[in-house]
Length: 350
Ligand code: TXA
Ligand code: MG
Image 1 (cartoon, rainbow, N blue to C red):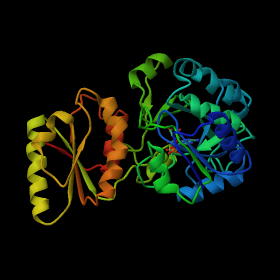
Image 2 (image 1 turned 120 degrees about the vertical axis):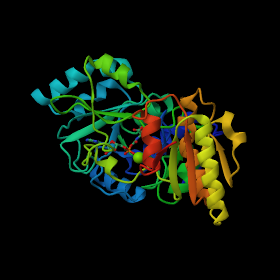
Image 3 (image 1 turned 90 degrees about the vertical axis):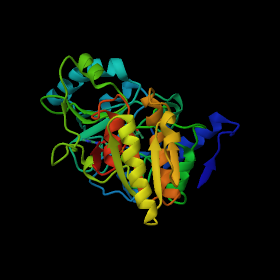
Image 4 (image 1 turned 90 degrees about the horizontal axis):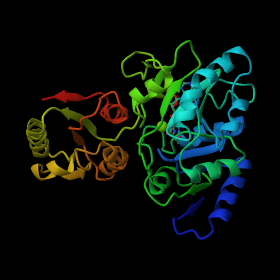
């Protein structure tokens, strides 16, 4: 495997080499504005198999197909009534949010192998916002299947070094974006294949803006609320650190008092405790590992830092992780969703 650092001289040569590797059936990890993706040829069943193996992911979990231009969408979508209707309803979303952190699910065409879609008759498509990602996809043949580039069950990678940690020796190349991903949380997934659009996964897009653009209210089906999620990936334990994690919600003083008391008690029993808190509250805490989520006024910064911090907790051997939830954010939004998944639903209101 080749590790290509941010100081690589020749961007063109590099992108060409990455594209060629992928066209020849190889696996290349690449940055997007959300998280790093683990790319393979989306039109090749063999490449899909290799992706599942490298990730250690069950093969019934469908992959997102990444494209670099809107013109490449129709080849993936079923011809005829069902496909055209889905495309027509999706048109305003595409117009407003592509390129960007929005994945749309359509009835699939015969060109998309069922190995790529985990046996489903639908296909998830994304046109990423990061120019480097689009340049890579276009050189790779235009259709790149990519899940997040973490080993299954680990937090998604937001830096090339995270990909390296998880995938070293398992894939052919990591294309390094040179800095942490701009958003740090995965795309929103909206299913356009049924009678009404469904939000399958919250992402770094304002839900109300999605609904305004679509002209209707989005039903939410992220699998956290219902028993059987529509996005198969949501049924697996995701975004998870190795230690036990608890999310603590409430007013700042009460949250700090609860967390510190628990941390003291557990440390007294010899457990290693990590605390994730906003910048302004860090001084209130004592723990084995103290991690700064950024100012409480900036939930975007918290999103950018979350996965890297969960990895640090693992590295430091944290047995327990407490996270202070103080953002003025909807718990159903991307940040709340990922925090709740990481904690396995362990929430305390104080
Ligand atoms: O931001 C992102 O979306 C990143 C970057 C790399 O693009 N990708 C990503 O992929 O998060 P992954 O595989 O980790 O998550 C894809 C989610 C899974 O929950 C999967 O089940 C769902 O999308 N999905 C994919 N295809 C689907 C389909 N045809 N129908 C329903 N859900 C689908
Ligand atoms: Mg993932």
